Image 1 (cartoon, rainbow, N blue to C red):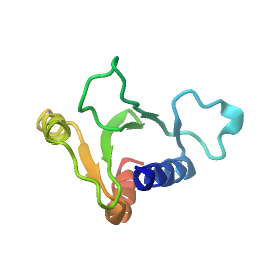
Image 2 (cartoon, rainbow, N blue to C red):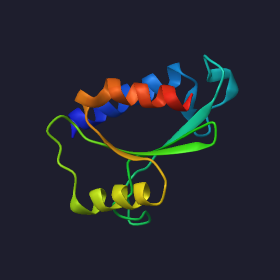
Image 3 (tube, helix red, strand yellow):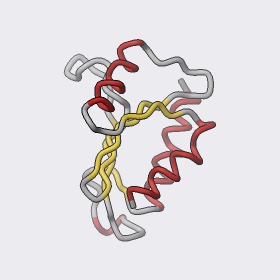
Length: 111
């Protein structure tokens, strides 16, 4: 779990460098012009099971991201949710640390 949390923090730091901030970040804490936001979802009894870990919105376009540490395994329900998002015309991805450069390229396309 620590590996996934470290990777999550790496993703968040990168997003902030391109102007994608946590939803609710105050303007005085923004280091570059904002172009979008992200929302980290936390599982609880009040959230729908299987939803991806992060919702990212850049210029009004959404990406749903399921984060995994290097050895993490997605649950069947998580894969189903990503599939449903993609089949609906959205963008849902399963993201491992090894795919981080490709993720940055994808974000670049949205910018």
